[in-house]
Image (cartoon, rainbow, N blue to C red; front, side, top):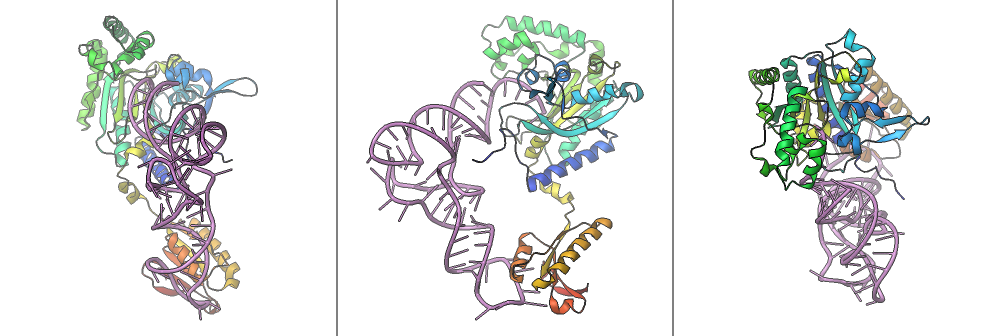
Length: 412
RNA sequence: GUGGUUGUAGCUCAAUUGGUUAGAGCAUCGGUUUGUGGAACCGAAGGCUACGGGUUCAAGUCCCGCCAGCCACCCCA
């Protein structure tokens, strides 16, 4: 009986692993140029952290978390997203006091028990950034732009930036009431919408079945208070000033409870229904709610596998990759195996010390030279160094260029 | 969690509609006289048809279950 990878997980191998590493490299390099610092948080946390930050009523907390008890009966959960952990660390290390304007990013695996689909996995990789202590619309704009830049840098075209404002607690409450009133007058809501009306009326705006019935639904923008409205408009002007196109989407609401004011999603038509490649927003109350100082915050999270899926134009990617020069060591005479082996170890070590971008394949015995050269081809070796008795006794090796088929002698 | 759909060799697919021993291409491995590669030719290996039941003289093919992938919903990155 063979054992398979659990549902919704996968082995990333070969070219996909390369792409993944390269994607991470590009993202980190963009983030660090915008002064975000990396932070690595635990992969599991106290269950209550997620319940309090993401919200008890959300699906993520309600039915998608991997929850378990440790040997002392402590309730823990595999992280379903990154923001909660980061905020926890920010408060725990008292960065809200010592470094209130901190800018951080993370890159790692998240876990959600969902039904898998292309671009949706139970273990998935996210890269995200959080910008603390800055309530300025410029912070919102920078976060959105940074997420868009990462996607663009890996060759994703036609990124649709959707943006909305959820307002502050006051204006959201008014909007919520108006929505409840509006929807209560509609009789033939779908089953899901009836539940949403109870749990989270904002989510009705998202419904794909009933959307047609909501032609004259109240718009959030009409309920924003003066401050929130100014703030939203400033974010939009900043995006325009930096030449980023966007669509205002009054129906955009996010599934996590902690958002305030700006929310956004970056979509691509290059994938199926799982088209949100990155998303995020402002959450000015979360740090305080989790026990820190009142601290403004805004961030995004980006789904790496989804981004990979959307990045069909992968050539741009690999153009940037500096492939190492592959060197294969062959032996024409089997009794030179020890010398050849030691030599291969030696040059790979020197390559590391001198920072030379090479990869060395040590020799193996039992094979004819013909087969060794075939193998060199298969692995796409650039050079083959052959240990041959006659030349070796003169202190020489044969260096074969696999592309040009030319062969020269080199000193041992 | 709901509905739909698919599952045959490492990969892409066949198998005359229920009928002998499940085939092919690519990939793999070996060989073509042994110190020189990509081609060509010859050969080999590789399958309890995802898994488990059932119907039938007979099941890769039909039925049920189960697992997994995909599509949409739900949700979300």
